Image 1 (cartoon, helix red, strand yellow):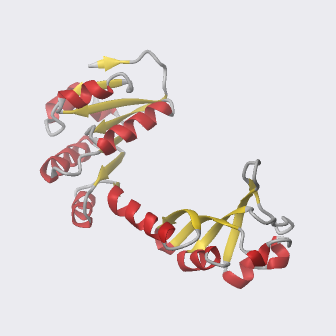
Image 2 (tube, rainbow, N blue to C red):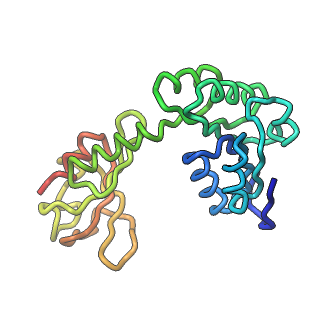
Image 3 (cartoon, one colour):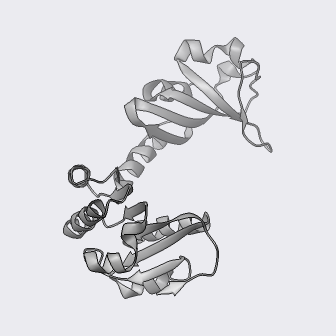
Length: 224
C-alpha cells in the first residue's frame, strides 16, 4: 500500500485493475488532481504504479470483504478496468452494483461482454480497442486531423478549412446550409482555438472544428 501526500480535489475514484488501460486511466485521473484508489491482485502492477496514485493496494477485486475494508462501498465512482478476465470483470462489476456505487464504468473487450456488464448494472461500458479502431478508420480514410463520434450518429471533427470557405465569412460560404454542419471553432497558426460566428472569415490553412451528422461531417472534411 502506498500514499502520496498531495491533496486531491473531489471524491476518490476507485480503479479496479491496473493493466495497461486501468493504469493509464488511473494515472491520468491522478494528474488531473483526483484522489485515486488503484486496486489489483498483481503485486508487481501495484508496485509499478504506487508512486503515481494516491493509494495503490494489492487485493482481489472479486472479494467483497476486501473491497469493504478498502472503503470501496463509500465511493461514488468506480472503474472496472478488467477486460481480459471475463469472470473477474463480471464478479467485480456485480459487487459494485451490490454496494450501490452511483457511477460504475466498466471496460469490455467485446460487444457481448459489454452487453453482459450493462445487464448486471454497469452504468457506462467502454470498448477501448473497438472505439479506437473506429476512430482511426475515419482518420486514415479522409482528411480529418481528429475525430470523435457520439451517440445517434453525431460527430465532431478537426479538419483543414476547405478551399470553398477560404477568404469568405462562414455566413457567406454557407457551409451550414449547404452541408448541414456547424463550424463551432476555428484555429489559426500560432493562435489558440476561438468560437466561430457567421462573421468569422476563414483563411487558408485554418483548422476548423465541425459538428454534425457523421456522414455530413466527413463530406465537408473531404472537400478539396
